[in-house]
Image (cartoon, rainbow, N blue to C red; front, side, top):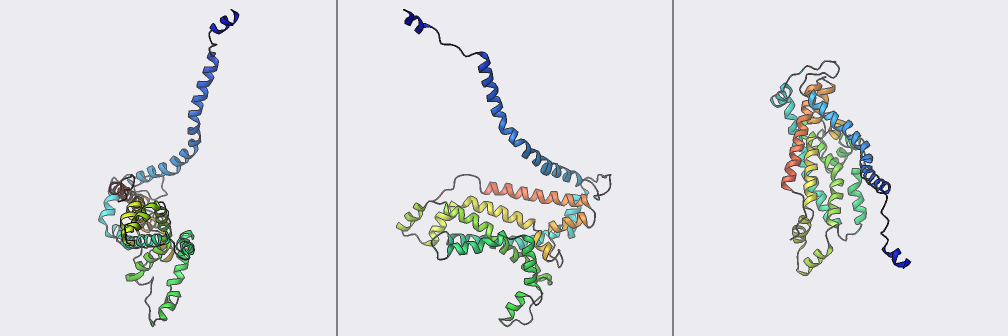
Length: 312
């Protein structure tokens, strides 16, 4: 009878204090990730969004960077950018770097495709192609400055094939931008090479085996397996190439300082702000460049929407 009474006794209910402590622990656990994100989000707002907001405000003023007062001028700075040829025409220099970027992408894709398969000394060649990207941009600029200077390395090389009166590679405005653009090809090809290489090696090997059984040629494998499989990476590389071509600064600034018609839009912006003390106009130029890059990013997402690649 005692055993029967013991069985019929209701189970003890948890005390309100225990359930309340569990709820508090659950709420604190949900808040923990936000505590970790608080510092990086604070730095992001402080060093990114606040300066961009100030830059947009400065673009509507005639501030010289020193005065306490910032006189509003409306859209005058933006009108000046699009109406004065000496400002907006420097965008034409970006065409050289855009063409060079397309050459760079083609070469990077070519080497990545070849070195993704069994090739003699492929690890050595991978290091050779990627190594320039690891170098500091200032060091590369100084190195190619000696390479292109009169009686320098390039002049010595072309003299071996009978060219005794070579042009001034960086002093002649008609060829200076070609020399700088080719330097950028050597400088940045390693980045795109690594992106393409990783994407190609992620494609399942069964697709290549099936293609071999069907008698597919190397070009057919590239066209119907590799290219569709790395479509997203190609789109990313294109947007990086176009954005980089519009915002070139490092190489021409170090090698020519923008002389001999090699000034880019970024160099012109910096000179406007710190040489001519027109911070308001320079801020407007920076806003225009930012809008162009954002538009290109949006267009890239429309042309290459995110999603799983379709391999045919």
